[in-house]
Image (tube, rainbow, N blue to C red):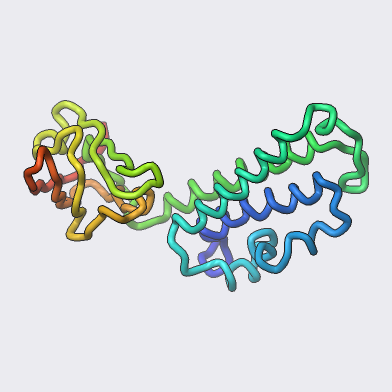
Length: 216
């Protein structure tokens, strides 16, 4: 879909959270789930022009945190109920359903939109002709900040450049990443693009340049 009319990745992540939240209200029998959801989540629920107007300008961590919080509330809701509660017959979509079917729809909706996110990623310029460095990274802190090397494949560009498992990345392409959410570090780049790493290893500060190659 042309960019002015489509959903952004942020919009779709916000949609996941909004759908979970409204079905929490529906599951608890709220007489007006839309009112319970409130204006805060309506753009995420409806998407379209409303979503494009209001869901923008945030970092990836913002949307992931919203989804994480909504999911935690969903799990708490389920933790306090049993299977009989899930199977209780209820009016739904003008027919008779139950909460199991309601939450199947929530999962189905997210799976569908995850496919849209994958399609959107294919059109991102930095992901076209994606190359590989041959290294795996992860967050340093439990709350997802920073970046460290957790694995280097043999004979990979990363190994040939000198990166090692256990290196803590201080700078990536000239940017301090020590307090950056790991999920927001743009590691994926086309083949042929070289990235600079400034790392800490056993108290020493080292620098490496790793040029990506085509997989295979």
